[in-house]
Amino acid sequence: MENYELFGAQGIIYDKEKKEVVLVKRKRDNLWVIPGGMIDEGETPEQACIREVFEEAGLRVEIIGLVGIYRRPNREAWGKKGDEARVYLCRELGGGFKENDEISEMRRFKVDALPHDIASHHIERIRDAVNYNGTHVERISY
Image (cartoon, rainbow, N blue to C red; front, side):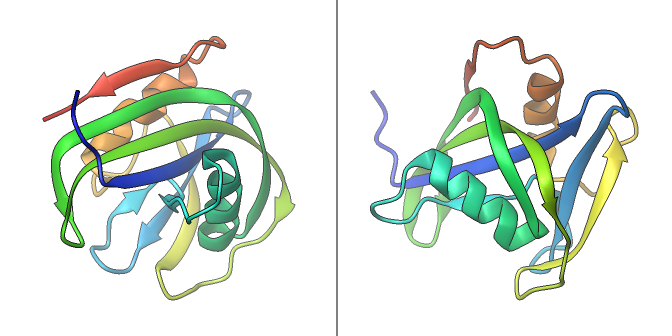
């Protein structure tokens, strides 16, 4: 069993009728990403997802279900090794984007026309959300 030192949560806001997903553009690397971040001490992954989506995208959401648990045992960041992200499918309830310290913009993209400058590992997560059937997946990438 791998040891993980980083634990995060992400929220995929997917409009099934329009076939669109919400992405935010990170300032630190100019990549489009699924809204999300690290789980704070004492916080559940679900609470972290809702908080991070609001902080990054300015949207209030409710969680529909757990899409997947994604592990990257070799990832190193902030002096720590190994990350595990819980990714949730979310329904948008309202709100609006405001630029902040981490994010320069928010946009909705058709799932068949994602931007070329998207964090590559997020593409699989979006595909899993589009195909979500009530059962979560578990994936490890090296």
